[in-house]
Image 1 (cartoon, rainbow, N blue to C red):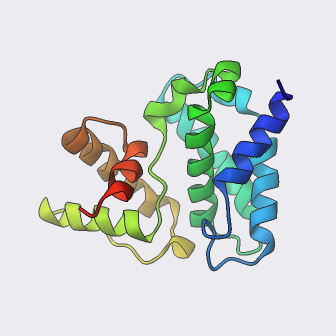
Image 2 (cartoon, rainbow, N blue to C red; image 1 turned 180 degrees about the horizontal axis):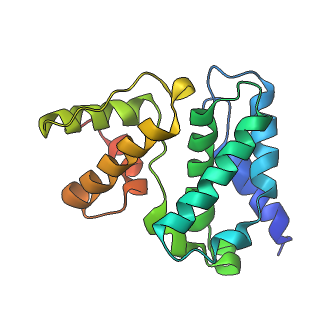
Length: 173
């Protein structure tokens, strides 16, 4: 079996492509892949609750934001969410780091299609969510979207919010 570091780098590479960071400077893909490939995944295996997870996710979001050319919090958060989803579902990384413990805390990667769906479903419940774009997304707005996504995922699909993308990308709802 290849070294665990190479498995992690592979997951980083398949998690972030040019379409994932569309509209960002070209070097964003390389910088992001390097960052994700070097994250200490062991630190996620000690997570015991949503608060601990959020603190660690916020730390990595801010660190990545400082490295990418656009300094976009939204892009940084999106790619971290995609990577952590893929890493926690990879059999080798999950076995090594017990990443299944974070699945219930994972966020829905926010992008225009996912955010617009959440806005639409929130409106049906008389909840107002405001979406501009991923590039201008800030922590406070993201939290509102993630809180609603968590509630919606449990009510509609009886699943964690990180799986909404799977349901939504398979069909037009």
